[in-house]
Amino acid sequence: MSPLDDLRISVSQAGNQNEVMILRLDGMLDTLTAPNLDRVIGQLLQQKKYNLVCDLAGVNYVSSAGWGIFISHIKEVRENQGDLKLTRLHPDVYEIFELLEFDTVIKSYESVDKAAGDFSTAISL
Image 1: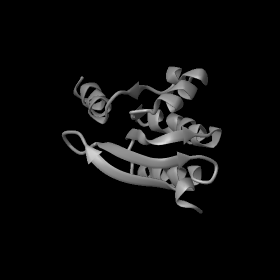
Image 2: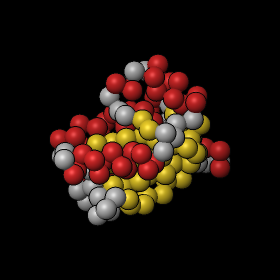
Image 3: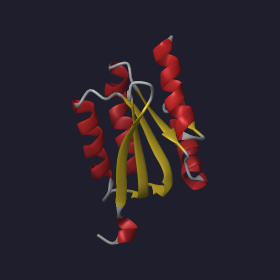
Image 4: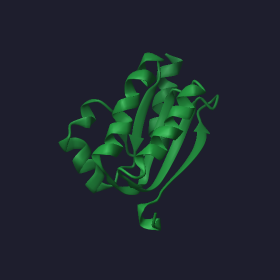
């Protein structure tokens, strides 16, 4: 795998009680790299971490396989009173996100702080 085909995923926590998991993605999210994201999200769900923010600032391409990972996990996340949010989408990625009408299923935000803060608002209600 060349560095151009690589996807780096780093996970950090946010929120008053570290209840929000921030996944920072850098690289391409395609057929070759989507299984890596699937594995990371799967591990978080096994740990009962259901408040997920995917920071896509470092991703300038998402294939259908990549979009499929987000969509495939959204049901389990929401059944457990969580959510999956996307942040800082590259303009080309956001254009496809809207074109596929995923914006009707998954919320996107301009910043990680806004997405993480949205969980805090929902939790404190």
